[in-house]
Image (cartoon, rainbow, N blue to C red; front, side, top):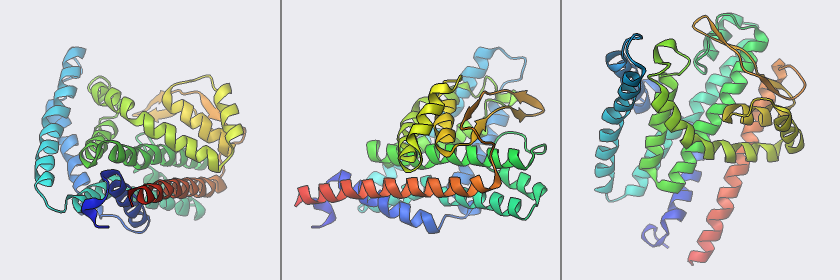
Length: 316
């Protein structure tokens, strides 16, 4: 059976499984990663088109929307035209997916935080965790560093890993690329940054709709490999029911750790409800979370493999 006789879904599943395995051991260096270049373009675009704080709110919304359109849409159109003209487009699809996934680098940053805390290098740990979070890190205690790393690693897993794979399988590589680049808008134009409080709203609300499938599927898989009953109990008792608080409550409950609480952005405290389990985060929980997300990854990989084998048998 050659590639031309395989169904598109079967080829997509094979591509996803191969990319997941490669991403476990290697990543594109940041200095040559096209996503890094796009990230810099997003930051530079904000400097040019973000209105002054005294400008009307509607102008911020319009500028934020146009900032997405003028940079993202032409790029996706050009890439779609180029890839459609290539003969072995499924190979290009795999390259695009690998570039979008890029979770190996996030995992290494998380492990670097664990290493720094294990060596009691608090200043270095704060610097390492600052690459994962948008909040201010210079005042974080050891527990604060660990909690920030855990929350960020889990949310990045849902957004950047599960979400990218979902949109790739559902709508193809261009959709996955568009979703991944929209995440850069969400992260670089962070809504807790006073300069972007209104300017970031179009990107935030758009990605808020796009991330929920990854949040749902990733959290369900994680509950299956941890403690679903504790997670559901923590969700029921949580007083804050927005999307992020919901997944953090389920995750924290399943790991029996307290997540959420106040965060500091530009010397401004933003208070969130504490959710999750009954215990404060400890250093050992960093490793437990790493193992739990690894188990979630392998469970998802096994399920995708079973689906692929079923489709393979049906295609014969």
